[in-house]
Image (cartoon, rainbow, N blue to C red; front, side, top):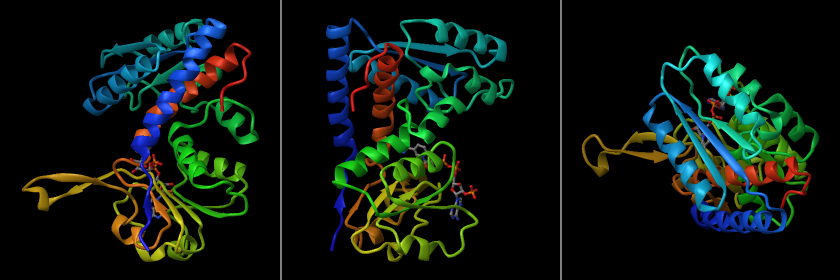
Length: 296
Ligand code: NDP
């Protein structure tokens, strides 16, 4: 048996098309243009690339996009001042502050300053709480992307055994909440889990969010299971030439592909979904702020 490869890139492209349709309807039916502000402090090259991509894709789906590039020396008070202005700006429905921040700025104070109704990254206690009790609102982007890919695989996930490996606030915890909401029986595994192989062997759905290259072995996977690999790890690739590297996930892709029913590749699986879900969250927050029901 060879697993079907879940094409996150194609799914994300299709999702952006659907988001553009929602944006167009909000503009024509409600004179509402969803607006996203992305804020970056300093010159971290990887963060610069993410922020530029986010701003470009926001504009491509027809949304209002604002990008703030602040110098490395920006003080916490200056950044908090910008967030206060964006919180009050009616053109802005989503605020994203790219992490990491320079050492002089406390990221927790910054996150807490973002108005929960504009918290498209779903970092604030308000939006995390809404997610936990099932109220409408933004959902952490990467888990939301995983959920969309899973919903596309299953008519219903009710009663399935799901294991989430990793318990970060960014990925593992919200992922487990979402799977619980789908009526899965959810197990959360982490660095202290005893006999991870045995836990994974029971699972119909495996979501790996650890950050360790190829840690989940193919023989751990239950035959026919659906595997969502969130991990992004750079490893040496001498086969590509001296000093070359490549990206791999947390799952041994070749081993797992031989047993799983479906699996996401790295790259090209979960990664492309994350920015698309940021745009989806901005449509959600713009709708809720204006008293409209967000599109599903
Ligand atoms: P964190 O480092 O915050 O969390 C890692 C989690 O893995 C922790 O809960 C840790 O457990 C657990 N863990 C570590 N070692 C083991 C082990 N040996 N066995 C079982 N569990 C273990 O990472 P993130 O959640 O932020 O990210 C995880 C991965 O996903 C990374 O590779 C990251 O690059 C990638 N990522 C990809 C995104 C995308 O868009 N595709 C977006 C975000 C992240 P404990 O809590 O006990 O320490």
